[in-house]
Amino acid sequence: MALDPTEQHLRHVEKDVLIPKIMREKARERCSEQVQGWIGLNSFQKPYYWYHGLKDFTKCCKDSGILMVVKCRKENSALKECLTAYYNDPAFYEECKMEYLKEREEFRKTGIPTKKRLQKLPTSM
Image (cartoon, rainbow, N blue to C red; front, side, top):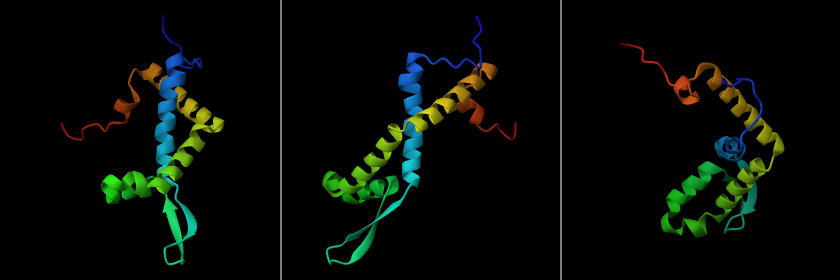
């Protein structure tokens, strides 16, 4: 029995594993691009901008070493907040679901997984 490429029904593993995986990857990418400025006061009571996002969290962890748990709380909280907002967004889930269905449909038509389709072909033989 051949599978219909345009079939919209999702199996349990697709709903609970594969689509959330796409959501994690996309949310992580979007949160790393998202940079938000916060005005605060430094130790000299002068205003400054504090930027956060995945890049700042990574930089903070690298710079802090063992003390990252204590020193990077603000960056970690901001990153978690950003990721959670995407995970709880029904429109974002639908977007990722449609992306998954499109990839699955293409696989069912061609038999070639997305990863292999996106790999570059050798230019010289």
